[in-house]
Image 1 (tube, rainbow over the protein chains, first blue to last red):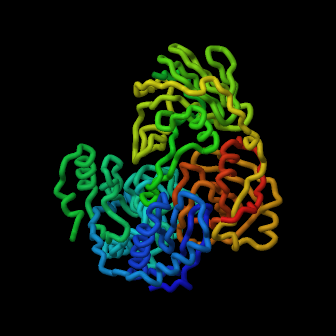
Image 2: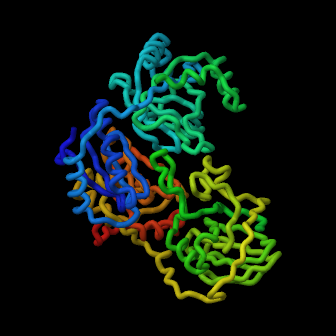
Image 3: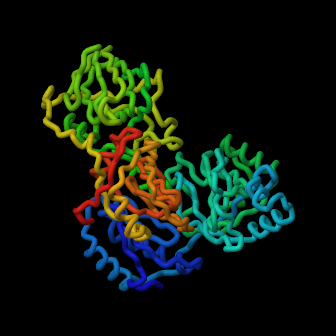
Length: 244
Length: 284
């Protein structure tokens, strides 16, 4: 997919960064995920973490390293590796409440034009997103897949309080707030299902590379599901989440 | 058991940190001044059975209900053990019912209290470091009772005072490497960056801010990975330096990266202090 000439190497102290020319394109992202796995296995004992973003792979080395030697090694790994495009990424369906109380920012952006808001949300529900990485806060997913014409600039002054579960748009990125916190993204709805649960051995059930589509629920359903989750009981809607 | 009589300004428990979870968006946490943290471990000598409290600006007042040994490192606060002044970098013998009180900082910002006991606190993702909302609280609170695991603990070099150079606490220079987006600065801006004194504001565990006169065009950069010590430049000229509880990704140009040594220096700088950047001559 990429040649070694296309990788831009840089570093932040003991973090080695590989940047790739980004394209909103699934096969490009599959390549990044693939190559990340290859690097993880190869450098396992030498790193404390490996992360990806939209256009980068980041290796957090435990100790100082020889930059030149690594560049050569990684370039060779890139040339020698076989890339497997057939990794089985999962598909998820997430409930989202889109009523007026959940999408004030969108109303503001469209200056109260209800039909434009509806048009935007209808199209939003038809899209398939992809979880690229977790960042910003524990369990905050960055999703790709929003068409350019649907991007909404980040707010100049962040909200004092963006609520847990807020499905929001920041530029052409989509994210879901894992907790209440100040936020500069435009809230368009609320997902009652927490994506990050610290009590679980693997706190996230959706992994980088997985696909996500949203389905609309009413405010009443949102309250019901939130209540069920808080009490730790099952709800029929939770069965709809996984869609393989 | 330790009874918290007074929590101080911002006192948290910190260990080696939560490494290996950045891919879930979880910051590393751990001590802001790694050098002072390591020194405590060195002095008490039993790495796995030491608990450390990081005290910021004004330290706590603690009552020990059982005997133990403690050592204080990092910033200088006025510290009294039962009304008697004690000093840093010395192993102290604490008896049952003793009271330890730390006052406002005199030199530096963060003091570490190391206790040769394993405090029983919440362990989340392999670490006991406080970080809300992963842990229930971000600080210890007045009235808290901190219990510890019973263990036989004998110290080899009891009462030994190690000679230790704490001069870094007062350094004004922060040694840095160039960051991935350093090139966005013009030649003049790059020169200016290493000349101007920069005043520290909003100093906390997430990071701190330095106001500069550098102005850059806003750029719709894709979010990128950052780490403690990464210096991002906002369009209005604010330099954001990530701390150990800072976000794992950021959206502003990463123009510099502090060396590990500079992170220790910065961790000891009180708000309002002026610092300078100096390009490191060691290459990474």
